[in-house]
Length: 634
Image 1 (cartoon, rainbow, N blue to C red):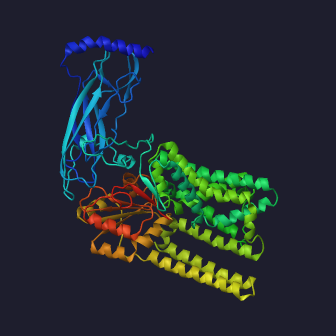
Image 2: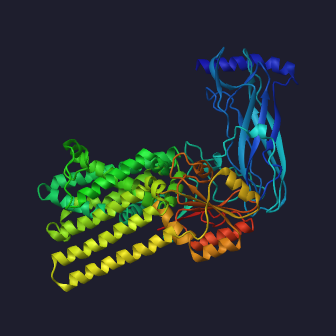
Image 3: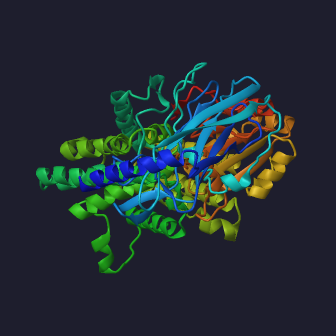
């Protein structure tokens, strides 16, 4: 109360001086400029408002020390067709004055306002008019609050017309990654409207954001119930991906063995396992939704990657009953065992960690939808995916008799476990690709995986002949073995056959390719990303895509993010809201922004993006114009 009275007294004392001084200028808008001389349809740009405060004076900052003080506020209403986002203010400085500590601006103040031009905007002049409101004070008194006007004049150029940057000194401190955090409105401003969309700051949004397409059901920006149902169902489905599939029968049999001694303890183990899995997704939610850190960067860390490989090898060795390896007893105390609470909790964490490289591209849409919501909703949504994934395991712990249908003892049970061991061994080799590739070459991993598949197939036939004298089991085993070998060989050929030469990503390579007025496709991938390999073999190597690439003289650039120091991370964070892969950017010859293909996409979508990029048509999610629909792909 004392500060509020003091500021009122100071303001009243300063009123006569303000009236007497009249035309004295203590602060002024020295410049209001755009960082481009003109704008293209689909372009993002920034308005910079420069306010110069004379020495000896200060203005209350945008976040003043008291709600009674006059905040520094910039208002720039949107005028069709432009979309205007919330201003980005500098941090204030804390100084001691007669009334106490104040958060203020001194000297030169620059406020940035991001703007965007829709892809369907018509060429013509564009005038953006706004205001800045401030209150100037000195050491002893404050003056009457002022509101100053500014106008920025520019033009919207025809699609394909080159634009030039300007005023680099004003925009040198603007972070281009800001655009990846902006939340686009679901509707464009109508002619004459003054809509101002919200920017996606770290504090969370207001519930605005893209819609989510879940198997044909469009989930809008406020359809929270449907979004959480979709997240839960998606989590259940994650148990079917190759990275997780070996865990399911192993865990089912583990629950069954425990239940034979104590049903209640089995249920408790199931709850602890589920807690570990959900906790892992909670970490994912905080990393991606709150801190907007690329989850894939964990897998790009060499030590994290190495730990995953060693854990998978350990599981594989433990699964092969014919291996007998003596290890120090201390290692067993930290192993994720089925019959301890800590073991089940760690097993839940491990299951979530192993699932991410196979599932991240599958719930890309959910992550973007979650990132567009307030933090609490976004985090809860991602944790719901974890709850859905944990649900089948919790059911198995509550009804362990379901596992009775699986062979519990005898040679057939050992055979199932050992075949799962081959799958775990293959997963370990896949994650070790970054270590194997520099020594044996880029194709060695795929042929090693093929060798593992062949060994698993012959092992299956051999054991079937050994365990059963009947013809039917042997024929079934032979058929499964042929399917394994045939499918693996076909997939290996697709992976090692490169229909065109990839250019390794660098900013120089991208700039040079775009300078040649060519369509440029940048694929963001990593050795640990299974969905990236799927996209490469089924989409990028599609015969029609290869034909389209050659016909349009497309430059194919690969941004390998296997290393956390890879140069492609910076570009990915600038153009991708959650910095996740699979992700492909398609640049037109003269476009300022790429067409973005997120998650798992089809050959038709990529071909359409290349064709439209060649015509300098800009789009966003899934190459679907400005509809802001995110496809939840499986």
